[in-house]
Amino acid sequence: MPLSQYFRLINVMARMALRADASRLYLGYIWWVLEPLLWVGVFYVVFVIILGSREEDFLPFLMVGKLSFVWFSKSVTQASNSIVASKGLVGKINVPKTLFPMAAVHEGLYRQAAVFIMMFIYVLIDGYAFTATWVYLIPVMLVNYVMIIACALIGACAVCMARDFAPLIGLGMMFLMFTSGVFWDVRMLADTATAEMVLTLNPLAFLLDAYRQVLLDGMPPDMGHLLSIGAGFGAVLCVMVLVMRRASHYLALKALTA
Amino acid sequence: MSTEAREVMLELDSVSLSYHTGKKTFDAGTHHVLNNVSMTLCKGEALGVIGRNGVGKTTTLRLMAGILAPTSGRVKVAEGKSASLLTLGLGFKPDLSGRDNALLAAMLQGSSRNEAEAFLDGIKEFSELGESFELPVKNYSAGMRARLAFTAALMTHVDILLIDEILSVGDAQFRGKALNAMQNRISGEQTVVFVSHMTDQVKVLCDRVIWLEHGKVVAEGPAAEVVDAYTQKVSRENKYVPEDKEGGQASG
Image (cartoon, rainbow over all chains, first blue to last red; front, side):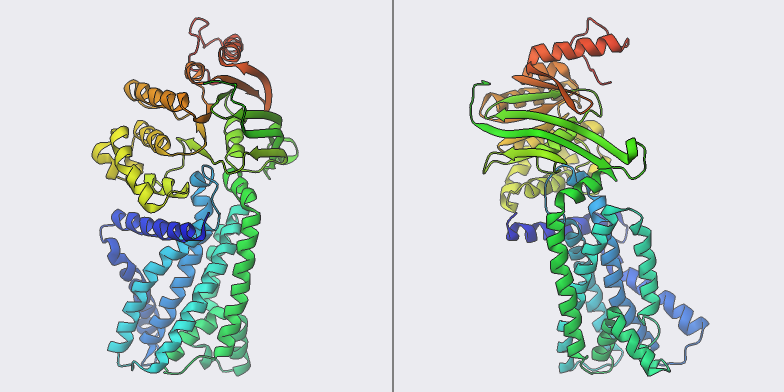
């Protein structure tokens, strides 16, 4: 399949899925923004109202962390089930198996565009300044995107090989949510060595922190660290594309028979 | 419909396919679908594949379409030729409309967006789906799905059409229309492999028939001869299939 056709298909599949999804729900496209807002609402009730967090800027902190995290978690979870969910098509047409997770990730990209716009507007309304530092959002988002694709391809292969991975991925997302500093600040950890360790070992924690640094602290992220994460996941992405090309028939057999 | 066309379009050479179920439901967890199957398909030929449920007919088509790879043996498709599998089954995305499904299917088979969109009005008209064409496929009846699948298939232009049970559903009127359309297509230069339980259709459409049993070829030859032998065997083994109803539904 020519590359242009491949990318066109990803876009068509993603847009069709979005349209079908919206037409199923009374509130349609409003859910794109409403769902992440409800998540933030839940955390706000728990951490600000019930647990009485003392920090003043906790809500913007929470919003930036959670809304960026949701991009990763939803895209990867959905992409992980994508080959198996499309087994009807997999059994009918010999297409690159990466098409299905890529379409799911692309669908997530469309949704996230709306979420990010909402997040930026909120941050500005809340009194944070729009500065030249915001330009660092571009590499942060790019690395985040590469990371999502790499993990989506791994997840899609894993679930295709054994359905048992699907609940494990759900559990993994929960684990990541608690360990990536979505609702606690990695930099506020009493032990700086632990903070460094979390940021080094968990690239997602680093990325969430980078979004906050740019948007809330007006500081550029550690670009060396960011680039090394990008390069690492970029390499994983390339390997996964090659593996999935090689194993295309095997994945089809697994999707159809497992 | 001559079998004398010499150009070989597709060849299965001692093809076997087995896989591990992982659940030990078959011997040592391995399920053997096809066992040392060989067949040749020439240009312009209509080849029928018959046999009961689970003998490997759909798997044979999937191997031909390049969707699956054989565990051993070789599948050779003539260079530059495309083979496309047409089934009624689960190929649809249930949440998408008939129009979107048809568009997606055409694009997945290599059409550009514009080419695919050019097919859509023809598909809507032939399938007689009317306004339902714009509704999600999950709201379709089995017959409506069959109409959409068949029509989308008919509009596709590929060198080798692999047809899996696509003419067996739908009402009598549409089935007649579909059969006619398929006959027109076959009487041209279209190369077809046709899998069906509707043995009367196989007789009408195919030049040559292969009978599969337990993943092996048990007979191969002129359509009428092989189909008759098959229906006789099924009739003998199944008292519910009346002897005098030759060509009736013979699924086991």
